[in-house]
Image 1 (cartoon, rainbow, N blue to C red):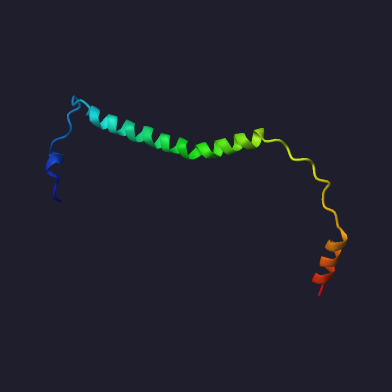
Image 2: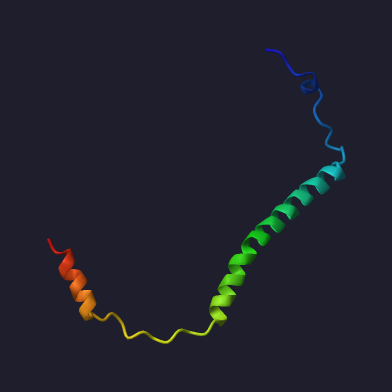
Length: 77
């Protein structure tokens, strides 16, 4: 088995974390959260618009009229 050259030197526990890496990871997380919020914004606006839209008058329901009965008669086999 061939060992990687760095495998023989374990990482020093006293080594300070790289702040650039942390900033990069923070920026990636923040930008992905921003993209998710931007994608959800139209759905939120639509739901607000629906909630504030005036209600349509209640319909009287289904009515079987003469022309509807004629259509039903024409579809019978």
